[in-house]
Image (tube, rainbow, N blue to C red):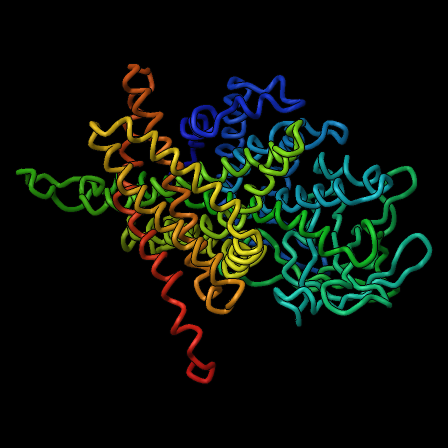
Length: 598
């Protein structure tokens, strides 16, 4: 089996040369952020991913988590790995130093998150949910809640969860029925929550559940939902662990993948009621939870990047070592490794170029988030927040959808061996399959994109993004004599025009006929992702060409970047025209058909 290796060269290229480290360094508190620190973090996180987490992935999938008497025991090695994770301070990379964090840019944390998820996604889900809980309490909790919980969550001594849906609700949170009965300075929580990732385990000393519930006089629908902190163990006045709260895991799901990550059904208040503490004001819980959810959506998009990278690495390693068949048209009868076959090269390039585009887009969006949170100018914060809001459903939806295709292609590279669990290739597809469902399905992300992010603001931010893409086209005009960049320019321009046409159609159509516009919501999301990925690689190609002209020591890397950028332009970007056709013309059959047809 191949061993995971962090794609350090590409990560450093994206941050230092493509997205740019300078704008992040200019933000308050980032004075010591530099390329050397970036390199050090990637190196050390890579060592942890390769040496500690990657060896757990396959056996953890085989063993899974076990539930007995309401206690979930993680797979072998997970508890020791979690302790090493906490001891290394990895959970606090981007958190406020006030609460024990290191205060680094979110972009740096995203790089580490990719490595955790590439090496062992089941493990990485635990600190990911904890990070989301930190965000929600930090932004919306009282000073008292912050003092009690943030230090322990940042250190990883306590982990966090997100308890949203219930058996009757699914993605429709307006149907949530969990009750919160006020009692002095706290509430008693009653109800059942499902699909709670790492909702119970023994790796951390305490588990801090963020729970959506309704107070007795709350209005119906989403306007009547409140958010509560419900710890597994109550916390004494001195901060020590107290008695067990009335919350327990009653079952864990048998799933297609991520077997080592327990997905729990949680029962609150089977006896006297679980004690919970209100976050913010009553009936504003969904607004607060979206802080956690939007963070999680970005992180799930990074999961899509990560699992795709790992699948690509395993497929490439296999292709280099698997001897089968003879070279086509090379005049030799010798048997060769399959990486010499054109179709295998095509598959590997299809995987590689998309992973690079996805990584770049995710990190670009993290850069927007860092600037939205910390830029000194309020107008600039607002502008970057709008860009982050626009691209978050794209990163989440597109990167996870592509992860299904990429991990499936990874199996195809292996041939029949890929269908055998022993090779490990199939696990990536099984694990990846949850990512387009987590934190809102692709359809939910697409409806958010088409409605809240495009139509509601008349496409203002989307057109601003397209204008930046047109600037890249102008930049490519300087290299018309270079056949590769000229081809990239032509293909990219066509794709940008397709995106612009679709956005304008949505702006014109959605207010009058949201049904017709929404029928093409997922194609619009995929169109955005495809073209944004092309934008990332078009800019990468320009940087690579300039580096080669300057006779950089990174010549081999830059030649590779030019190759993947051109392959993406010629083989992936043409899909933009197909998605555009689906957006502006594919709605008729969808809207016209009666449900009885199915």
